[in-house]
Figure (tube, helix red, strand yellow):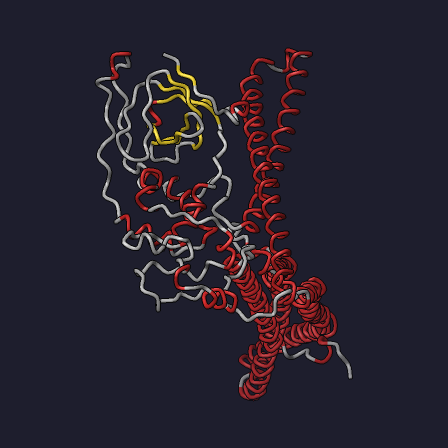
Length: 620
């Protein structure tokens, strides 16, 4: 079957015009479809990226970097973000390679189509004009022939009647005949011209114009197929990357290790404490006064402690209440004019703020474990804030915390050293080439970096000392636990049987309370049991906090409240704790006197060489 529009569709000019217009409309509709699909891909990528960012773990959450399931989820979110990036790239390729190109091509196609159909209309108008001229010459020839025939009949009739009129009629008939002959020639000429134009129109002009329209239509259809192929190729291009992302998601899911995560929980939350020992039997059958029962957290090792017969709450009143009532009120403002005579007019610390009942705070302390009492007391002395040496944490947690802190400080020291080296090199360059810059302009920044480096190194040494202390305590504790475990394995008694046997073997005359506070000779005296003795021993055995510097008093201060320390002007003291933001600094005198003084009354010198300062000296 022939596929030449000029030969097969020579009479379908109007239909061809409608078909090509519909084809261009289809191309515009397909371009709009691709554009909307690109917008959907772009919106999808933005939503996926926003979702990934929303659920991505925050940097402040350290727990999410320890466990494999958290790391797997973070890796999945990263790969999902990569998928979003590929979808965004797909949308960009669709817009750039298809939408923009098709939009430009549609404009060119419309212009070309308009030109071709204008040429077709001109050819159609020419053949129609030639046909009209042929019809006009034909009608003229027909009219002239009829007039010549009527003139001839008239001439024949007049010639028979009157010779004079007959001559005139013959001349008229002759003229009509000549006019008819001329019309005939003109008609023949018009007919030949129309046939020639018609042949040229249907065999030359129309095939050429229609062939151009056919070629234009084929190019349009081919362009649609090319656009569809580019669309599929653009999506196929991102599929390998998406496949790799999906494979990475599968690998992340397979990397989850439940046993490792459970071990990590042990590493994170292990306190290193021993489980509670057996609860001792308390014999209430004997006639004696009720005493406070021991907590379930006290184990059998409390029997080896020394027992005190002192009335603990009253004998230890000064030292304990000093800790429980550390100054929490704002410090007094410094005097307007410091002078040696200002001792008598020195401001007094304001009256103590309202506190919760001391018995409630004592009960909170007594209900806690024996190893946490020092931490509780230190927390009280620091106003509830965490100590710098992490002593409020269990041994395992303290060691991990200090290791993390030392690692961070080491990284900061490395950065500061690199910055210092860069500044030194810059200063050398400026000294060799003054036109490049002033060497003195680097000095302030260099001095600042050196001070920061010194501070970080001091902090690193302090944390390393604390870490060594924690490691030694942890090793001692582990050796103690191992020795205790061997002792426990050598006995086959049930829990609590030893205490019951000891109580059963005692005679009534020799029975005492576990701390030895109850005796037959002093039955009227009230004593506390081993809990108070244990707490007292823990408090007595508390190690002194290291000195972090020295301070010099600028004004005299009379500390009348519990927890404060009096000082005179010019006195040199050791700094134990810096100001925590409440306006009070903890200082020490003579290794046994500690207390709080207003920060505004002293000048602090934080120096690493001042560590271990423990001598008393007064400058008047």
